[in-house]
Amino acid sequence: MKIFTKEQIIGLLDTDLAVRRLEEGFIAFSNGKVQVPPTQAFTFPQANGDCCIKSAHVAGSDTFTVKISTGFYDNPGKGLPSNDGLMMVVSATTGQPIALLQDEGWLTCIRTALAGRIAARILAPANVKAIGMLGTGTQARMQLEQLAAVTPCRKVIAWGRSDFQLAAYKTFASGLGFEVEVTRDAEVVARNANLIVCATPSREPLLLSEWVQPGTHITAVGTDAPGKQELDPALVARADRIIVDALNQSSQYGEVSHALNAGLIGEQQLTELGALLEGRVPGRDDDEQITLVDLTGVAVQDAQISGCVLASLNSQSTL
Amino acid sequence: MKIFTKEQIIGLLDTDLAVRRLEEGFIAFSNGKVQVPPTQAFTFPQANGDCCIKSAHVAGSDTFTVKISTGFYDNPGKGLPSNDGLMMVVSATTGQPIALLQDEGWLTCIRTALAGRIAARILAPANVKAIGMLGTGTQARMQLEQLAAVTPCRKVIAWGRSDFQLAAYKTFASGLGFEVEVTRDAEVVARNANLIVCATPSREPLLLSEWVQPGTHITAVGTDAPGKQELDPALVARADRIIVDALNQSSQYGEVSHALNAGLIGEQQLTELGALLEGRVPGRDDDEQITLVDLTGVAVQDAQISGCVLASLNSQSTL
Image 1 (cartoon, chains in turn green, yellow):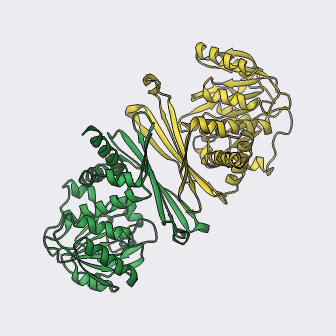
Image 2 (cartoon, rainbow over the protein chains, first blue to last red):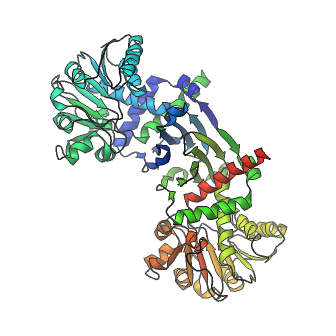
Image 3 (cartoon, rainbow over the protein chains, first blue to last red):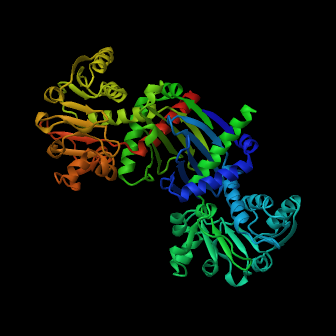
């Protein structure tokens, strides 16, 4: 069995290949070609921690992937990062373990950011005036890095709760070549940006419907577990296109779950990202539509990104 | 993260400590003190393989365990063992991976054999005339090795479908100091042994009720998945004590599921092994009772045996 550290994995990953693999994965998933057993979840209340185990196999793939992700929110006080994790890649032809990817959660971050990139490439308005970023953490940084690959826009308006973190985000985004505005008022983001990414662990709506301009695309990535919410349910209902990564998951705890529960939308209005990628449903029709992609995170992304790391390794070996 | 090979794990494991840890685990499980998310299961029909992922955390433990077990039944034709697997031990206080146990499925085998040993120690009749063993594979060998620790009986009657495998089993058991009889007729086992272990992957009853003698104890370990069966449901119904490792699992696919589905027994007749170990329910009252332990295999055993490997390591380190 091969064992890789986070640094090796970051060095190996071919981002363009990963985008293609993720798109193929979303399509296979939406066509029922992926085995995705129910997520295993643990809570550790005494340590303010949780863990989830996600596994997937894409039909026809030589491997399947089991991912362990942990979040222990008192870790920073101990000098440790809050999140950790690893992926095990196992042969789907012999059952033998093939690789242990000790990515410390990085692969989950990058596959989430790449899903945001894919969503923006398909649904962002033709003329992005400014990127709006809710959040200043790792995911908010990786989303901006990936958006730079699919839009020429180099203006970002970032929202956060802390001036200190906003200042750090400004330094980061300036380093990427962006003109950066920071604010503690989410309305400023909504009124001035028309490509908005929500990348926070919020448990209450941050983005209200009345603030959002016609033509805006919104990608929400924060609602990866029950109890989380970033969007006003009225905004979800107002969207002309509502795309989700996984119908069953999103309707349980994604942004759309809140709008469904409030009776503001019906399940028939939801479309999976894989169906959109395959061209089975329409994307954006004009620059006045509001489009929404609600990403809860599905195990097929883990299977595809880990397979991509191994493929990158093999292609390097044969060069 | 520490990484251990199968050979290192076999060398490290303190069997007596493992028995104690497993008993504590069964008791904690039966008291609702173990988080056991639903098993994740994959099938790979084209490769004649399957995989299950079992995870558990015992309340108060510093660690939790995620186990990947695979069975690929065409592997022997490729010169590979059918079964493989590993366990990941993760900190329940920080979420960091602590150890990777590359046991290749050995820990699952030994924790199952030790559960059989625990069952026999509590429920076997006072005077074991002969041990009956249905099966000749790895598990049938490990069960016999472990029974030798809890009964002075050194006579075994082994049943199998192949003369070749029976001859090999005879050599193995003789090497342990047993007087060995082999047969292809399970009735011979049932009529002459009063401590019987069923350790086969059978999908139909092997042991009929009318053959079994009063006073016999039976441990069945083969029904670890839907579709498997080793015992006549009438034998299950005839037992004076029906002990299961996990009520929810056993009633779904254990030996007892067949008797439940046939209406021969009711769920109120089932008792968990943990309750028996804790003394909350009676064990064997006399030498005429038939006792049955139906072991489907629960993730708490994996958590306890992997924790035991690490404890054995730590105790060696501090010597």
